[in-house]
Amino acid sequence: MYYTNILVSVTEICTVGCRHCGFIGSTRERQPADEEIANWVTQACDFGIPAIIFTGGEPFQRFSLLKAGVRAAAQHPDKPKIGCFTSSFWGKDPETVDKFMSQLEGLTHFYLSTDVFHQERVPAQYVRNVIDGALAHGVRDISLCITIAKDEEEQQIRSMYDDYGDRLLIHVDRVISSPHIDPVAATGHPPLPEHYAKHCYLHTPIINPNGDLAACHVAKVGAHRPLDKDVYFLGNLKERSFPEIMAEADGDYSYQYLRAFGPQGVARLVNENDELRDRFGAKTYSSGCDMCSKVLLTRKGRQALRDHVADPFQQSLIDTVRESRFGEVREGAR
Ligand code: SF4
Image 1 (cartoon, helix red, strand yellow):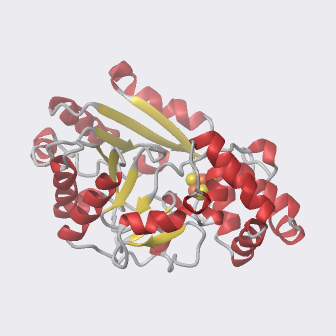
Image 2 (tube, rainbow, N blue to C red):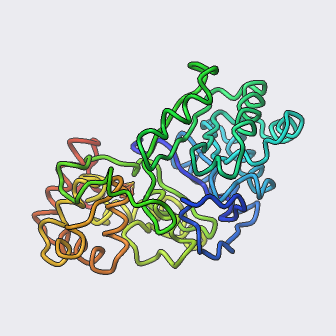
């Protein structure tokens, strides 16, 4: 199975209000029903995805939805891993943490967002309370997710949790630039292929609260505007089933180009296209996702990719990479 996890966004609501948050300025009014979340989780498990990760917004701000999703995953016969992102805003004391944790039976992995941005809003002690409560409830894996704008921030945050030693996993990522945070020029790269990897987070698709199933986390932009024209959009689970959407994605060469070549392929596209090079070539980007989304969330970027992959030669290249890297043969080519 290529897909290692799926993100399930139970809500776009979060009142923590970090200044680096991609949801700033969005309406965030979309909300599924408990039964919909349970149904989408079950479909993803039936498809064979081995780990479900709940996200938001802040999943703990819609706790009944989170509980419904965790319950559906825990009851699935495949026994998937069950993870959850949180800011730990609810971790004000051990008793409160215990109350929440005792209702989330089956949770195996916490992803705790803690960085200079979150710490302006959520004290580190809250995060520590959640870590302690999760350990007491037997949560197997606990990851600190540290988003940095400057290199020195990583050590600053790590040092606050040093005493947990190897009980914690650490994941560090660069913040996606926005008007609300410092410019990333000091650490960013121009869109040249040598600065970017061939792989990214496409093995982790996402379900948004309105049922949109999309290629990766960048689809959270769906809180700002409809996603259905974007290359990251795969389909909507209120209209079609999970396997139907994935069968169509199998023949979607824009999506398959991203799977085959990752952000490195997007950088190559920028360099081979005069209009894209003029528009994006002189800028710098904090990460592959920053560059990829800045290019492909524009009409011109999206169209350039569609034109590129309409060429039968490019399609056969993509098919070849899929076969050699993932052992996949496209449905129509069998
Ligand atoms: S590089 Fe692009 S396709 Fe890959 S995870 Fe980031 S935004 Fe998604």
